[in-house]
Amino acid sequence: MNIFLILKVIKIRRRKETIGDLDILVSSNNPDEVMDYFVKYDRVKSVLMKGSTKTSVILDDNVQVDLRVVEDKSFGSALQYFTGSKEHNVKMRSIAIKKGFKLNEYGLFDKKTEKFIIGKEEVDIYKKLGLAYIEPELRENRSEVDSASKNLLPNLITQSDIKGDLHVHSNYSDGSEKIEDMVKVAVEMGYEYIGFADHSQSLRVANGLNFNRVKKKKSEIDKIQKKYPQIKIFCSTECDILKDGSLDYDDKILDFFDYVVIGIHTKFLMDKKEITNRIIKGMENKYSSILAHPTCRIIGYREPFDLDIEKILDSAKDTGTYMEINSFPDRLDLNDLHSKMAKDRGVKIAINTDAHQLDQLSYIKYGISNARRGWLEKNDVLNTKNLKEINKIFGL
Image 1 (tube, rainbow, N blue to C red):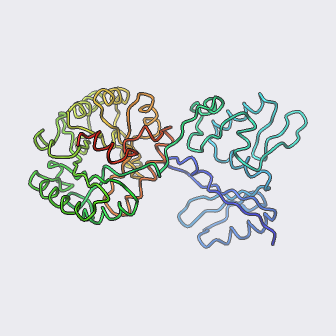
Image 2: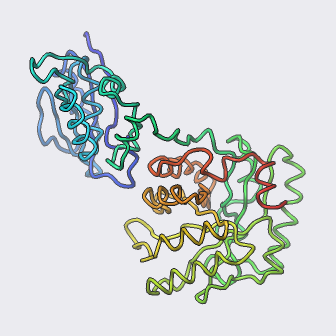
Image 3: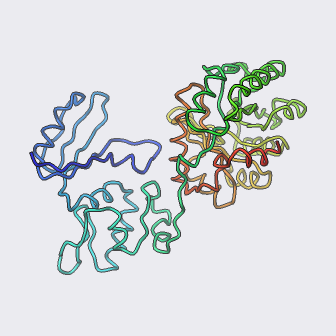
């Protein structure tokens, strides 16, 4: 059997928060054999249509998957086309027309003669149109094509740039794991530091810590630190911003922590002005370092606050507060648009997992995806700094 096969899950390449279905792209010179194999997958519940270039199925979890087969010479062009977005593709086709070409999923063609020019490699499509390669996460027609024409695209952050996680939880509050067990995983991940930001005293539903329990936690961290000198273990808090904008600990207690993460977890029903001012007052506390999940959305469950986000970001710039991209898959907060707004204002970001279990430390990859969609580079993100730099930033 002479099959040349490359598979790509297309619609997740842009790393959007949610997707409706999946496209899989294949190049093969035996498309019928590929389709026959595909529909026999044991999770296929029903076949909607079956052809030699496209087959659509419904999986047992009711997700639709479309398999498309193209010739090898067209694979790069098809990959670019089906990755989208629609708006990005319209812009790309416009550029092609201006340069005397026609662009579609089958390749780049001479507009007058219809002669096939290129199509096998995605990067070659961009190059032939005079553009730097545009990473899939940026393909939303948010000036990325114009930037690519001027070679001004950002050098997007990668997961290898991350040096630590500054917002995780332990079983001192509502986490499931012991501090030492979380530290072990962080060491395995190659981190230079990890920060335990357990909930503050008023959040009883999350087993928030009074000061006596904070001191007990710090004592345990000190003991564990001696066993793991290769990683710095920070003692932090996720301190509630109360309804009036004050923080849940007084300044004497806040001074006890290495740094302070602040966030809202109660009293959500406030109007735009009230919630905006509440957050700004919290950021104005001299001990505030990072604003956790700034809009408090939970995808599919709770809508984000109706914030004056520009005013929040301006205040973050003035107060030196880092805005968090919370990497939890149902948060991803800040979102990509707000992350780009922060970058444009010179507001720095912290990408954290808010992990409550060991396996959730891997959620950092989702925060990275959101950061990339927001055009963030290594220098835009707090926890790409090494331990020495972090200590300096936090005044330690």
